[in-house]
Length: 419
Image 1 (cartoon, rainbow, N blue to C red):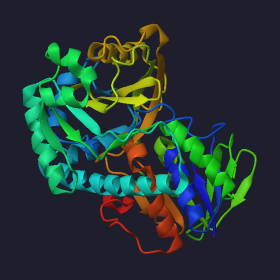
Image 2: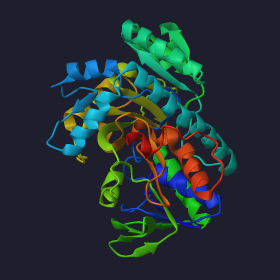
Image 3: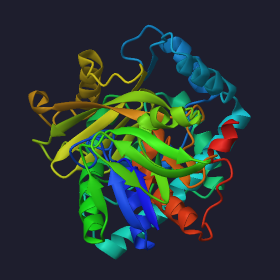
């Protein structure tokens, strides 16, 4: 079967890999000049099943109100006269209940755990290298009340199959000695450790896997902005780019935040909205002062990953449409927060700044599976967990299109949940 994959980020490339492995003739369409140059380029670098907590919770709603007007707010809304945004916000508010948060956590964790297993198999099969570290992920907390609340959520995740350990300050420092200075300055009251999570360079992984896909016969068409999808009699037939027309028997939309734009003319209203995030890549100049274990600083919503000789710090979220400009004040806040935690690890003048758009659904759950149009499929809406869920999502789509029995229940993951 000829299959088109739209998007060459980590989600699109893993989809192409699993489709090619299943025997499909795969063509990838990408508007950028190469693989993984947008959201997958400089993200937090964590494969973090432990981070499968939806944005929409009663606690988050209270925090958003407190954060209003603050430029350093971890989550900032720039409310505009955009009907899509207001519709998205209404769905977000609907999910801000304890019962909905539990449902959405289970759905997110279901994909994340499956994806982590698929990544392990992929590494074994391919030997792919991407600055990966299998040292687990440690959530750290300054506020004891926040630590206690997170510990309750960690116990719920344990019940859903994710191994997590609630630990004190001394145990945090024992796991990551570079945290000693922060602990001495009362920056850490405790932590939660997930030993089976890991980290790695998403861009390096994506480009390496793209090269492997090419060796498997996958064609990549870069610099190819999509003009329209072609549908006849309720069935996908192909697409037009600025330069070419591609015919195909099936298609997977893996365009992240831009997925709704190509689907809207087909009458498919996908509630995915862009959430701008920031990252800082800091070359390490003092290796004893930089962490090896990946970290999540929960109160600030910042993640830390050691990628070779660099420290990647990523976080913040800004609902501001498709604006990808780097806000200097917010990016500097990320850098200052990192240097407060690890004051001697690097020289701030050497830092590189980046921003990208995360495809955010109102419930934080990705949108996977079929649509009302025959042979048109979705693999998008992964928010901050695109890298975490990429391999699993790609395998799910490949199995679905190939007519194989799925290894995971798709209930609650399809676009039909928004009907």
